[in-house]
Length: 99
Image 1 (cartoon, helix red, strand yellow):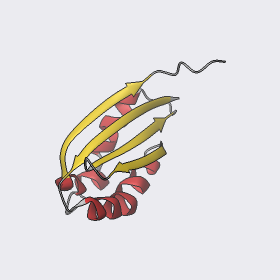
Image 2 (tube, rainbow, N blue to C red):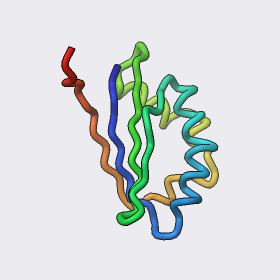
Image 3 (tube, helix red, strand yellow):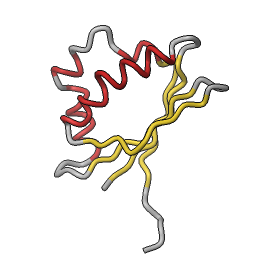
Image 4 (cartoon, rainbow, N blue to C red):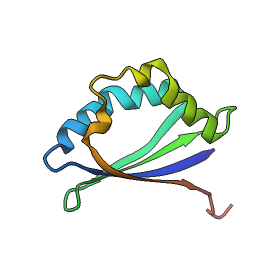
């Protein structure tokens, strides 16, 4: 399984709107494309939304992610929840947990 850490800085005053739209739109759409949400957190002091995505399907992470963003469902989100995001960091992670 592949995991990706995503850290978003959300516009001041828009965290509640972002979370509502993320839950109502992004989570279900990601799941339809074979992704799992491993967890999500916020840091109020720095307006960050942190989440971990997981994927174990037949495609590479890059293919699955590109297909998600190119899908009619994702392209058609209106308004686009990403309007709440100031900046993003995305990191593919490798498992180093002891066996």
